[in-house]
Image 1: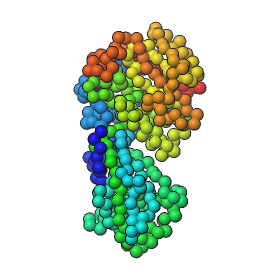
Image 2: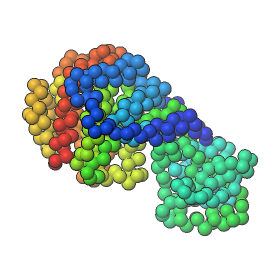
Image 3: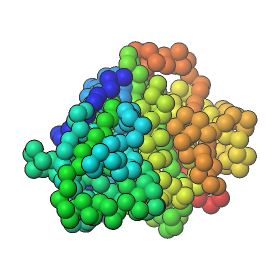
Image 4: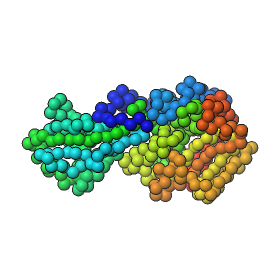
Length: 412
C-alpha cells in the first residue's frame, strides 16, 4: 500500500468529486423511451458498458487511475437513470501517527481528538492564532498560520463534554486538519480567540491511496424511508478485466437503476457500486456503512443485497440463513419460469464480504447472490475473465430475477 504523509489534499480530485457529486440530471420525461424496456436493448447496453468498463479500461484495482476512470463512467450511467447519483470518495487507509493530536497553549495541551479522514499538518506542526469562523456549515474555529496568514487547521466542537471523534465524508475528506474539542474546553478556546494567543498544533497522519477511490451511490426515494440497499463491487484484481467478477454484476445494477428510474417504490432503493472489495478488506463498503452512521440514516436500511459474480452461469445461487428470503427467492424463480436450476444455501451466512459492515444495523436482513452453471468459474481472477467471456444471457436472467425479487421484497 502506498501510504502517504499528507497535509495538502488532492485538489484536482477534490474538485472533480465535488463537480460529479453535484451532477443532477432531469428524470426521464413521461412517456420517454426506456433504454432497458426490451431484452435486445438490455443486452446492447450491457455489451456497451462491459466494453467501456472492462475491455477499454482493462484491469482496474482500487486506488488506480483505471479504477477512478471506471467509477466516473459508472456514475455517469447511474446519473442518467437516478438524479443525484454521486461519487462517494473514501480512503482505503487513514491513520493518526500519534496517540492524540497536539494542541498546545503555553506548553499545556488542550484535549482533542482528530476527525477521521482529515488531512494532516506539516510533520513539524505549525504555530497559529485561533479565530472564530462564521459557523455556517463550518467548524467553529480556524487556526491561522502566523507565517502564511492563512487558515491551516480547524477546530470543531463535539456535542459531548469531552471530545468525540468525527467521521468525515464527501468534500470534507482530506480537508484541513481537524481537531475536535469537548464542550468543557470551549470557554478556554474563546478566551484564546479574544486574546489572539498563539497555539502550536500538530496532527500527523498517513493516508492511502493518493489517487481518489470511490463508491458510486444512487438512491430512488420510496414512499417511506425503509430501504433496500443493493451492493456490487466494481474493482478488479491486478491481472484481469474483472468482467464476471464483478463488473457484469455492476452492469445488472445499472440496468435495474434504469428500469426503476422515475418510479415511486414502496421502499427507498439505494444502489452502491463499491470499491476496494478485492483484497482490501471491503474498505468501500465499510466507508459507506460509516457514512450512513455519520448521517444518521443507517437505521433505515431493512434489507442488504450483495451481488457478486452473477454471470458464471444462469443458475442464481441464493445464500442466506434468513428463511423468509430463501422462500422469496424460490417464489421468484417459480413465477418467472426461467428454465434454470437455482441453487439455495440456507445454511450459508449472508453477512459476509461487502454486506458485513452493515451487520449490526438493528433489524436488517441480508442475502447474497452468486451464480453457477457455465464452465467459466476457472477464469476467476485470471486474464480470461474479460468482457468477451461474459454470457449476456446471464446478464439478462440476473436482471429479470433481481427486478422481480426487489419488487416482491417490498411486500415482506
